[in-house]
Length: 433
Image (tube, rainbow, N blue to C red):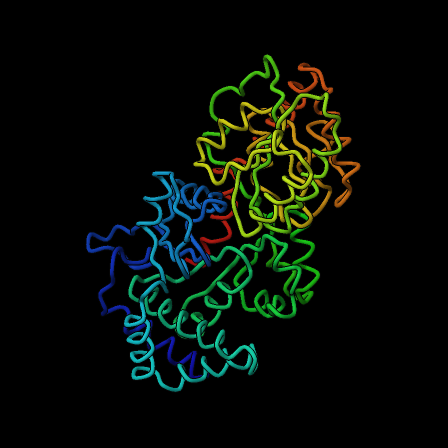
């Protein structure tokens, strides 16, 4: 009850208060012309090299007429070599990262202005995670307090979150402290691996709407949602950056003998299996594999490569700028991604968009994009099937690879166009702006 009374009061206060930046679209400008509908985006770590699809989505929403304020819980430790990503970082407000004074001031202001509401939100945060999660609860509460005040100052009524993990927990608490609604895009596998710990059911129940990035993802969200809330769960697929679909796909020509994998060097990507598959392919077969990406398992993979004696066939290239990734895909025979757990990897879309077939595991949303007309779907965890598919790629004629690439490019254009998909998302967002 107090929250509703406070929210009504805040709406009255807002009419007389000043804001940082533009006022909300529902509040007319001095000239009587409404500004663009405004919302916020929140991500746990943003911008991040492996999350460039979020930047693509935001840009497409802005082309659709929305104004997006970017927030991140913390900044990425990865130093992006890409100028566009560096500019995006400059446009993004971080809640943490050395902002202790600002966070302290935010909590004190909230306690002074609305003590009962602030303390009830803190109690809710602590209850949600129990005594063992006390530090995490306090962190979410402090971040949410700072976020709520920033949204209030900017006149923002709605926040959209990517990934249904801790950043949604922060937005959910912020929505208890200021009159905003929230929505989120769940990607998997993290949300679906720990639905109870993350209270996925509760997050869906309090959200304005929820998005899955595939039909499979929507099904997993429905699995944990009350039947009464199924209508608010939708599918909006991630998209490739526009330059992947601009112009003509590069011809296979003299098809390269190089395979490419683009992935974070982490356990869920199945890269040790890929290294074992390379070792199983006869030495007389001439080919190389470039792995683009970095992560916590780099030393493990380097040791595995040395142990299996395939250092002459495999290179770990580290993170590359988006333009370099596109060039590497264009110059490859095919993309290989032997993941153990996924949502729907954007790199599959990128490879197909430039006319390259893919090898991928038949998990999560991947079969909605990949089939035998544009790639090779293999059982998850089978080194035999992976090696067999790699041999099939090496045996394929240029004509077959070209035909598969054309099918893949057409499918990406139909299913993963940034402006088409952002239009769907904008349609879900506008009622709450």
